[in-house]
Image 1 (cartoon, rainbow, N blue to C red):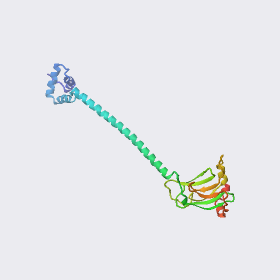
Image 2: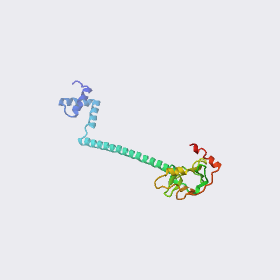
Image 3: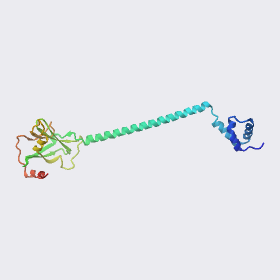
Length: 235
C-alpha cells in the first residue's frame, strides 16, 4: 500500500474519532498512526479535549454560567458601592461646608452689652443723633441688625458668627462713629399702628444700651464730631 500523507490522515481523524468512516478508512488510519508519532499525538489530544462525557460538559457549562453570574453580581455590587461612596462623600462635603458657613459666616450671635462701649452721644446741627461705638473685647462685628417693637423702641443689634474673629485693624463696625436719623427711621417704619420712635438703643432688646429717649436733651456735637459727618449732606 502506498504511504498516505499526514495531511490526508489529519483530515480523516475527526471521522475516525467519531467512528463514522468505512472499515477500509479505519484500517488505513490505524496503520498510519501505528508508525506516525505526530498523527498519533493529534488523535490523543482529540481524545483528551473532545472526548468528555456529556455530564462533564454540562457541568462545565453550569460552572461557567455560575462564574459569569458571580462576576456580574460583583460588578453590580462594585457599581452600587461606588455610587453610595459618591453620595456619602458629597454628603460629608456638604455637611463640612454648611458647618463652616454656620460657624464662621452666619451672623447669629448677638454681641453682649458688657463689651459694648457707647460714648460721645450728641446731636448734630441737622438734628441727627451721633455717637461713637466700640467693642472692647477685640473681636470683629460683621453685621448690625435693625428692628422696632410695638412701643416705638428702635434697636441696633451687633451680631457675629458663632466662632468670632479678631479685628484686623481698629476700624469698622467694632470701632466707629455713627448716627441715627430719626426722620428717616420714622419714615422707614411708617405703618398703620406704628408710633414714631420713642427711644433708640444699641444692643440686643434683652440687654440694650440707651442712646436716646424722647424728651431727652442731648448736648450739641463738638466740631470734631461734626467733622466725622461733614460729607453727609453731599450724599
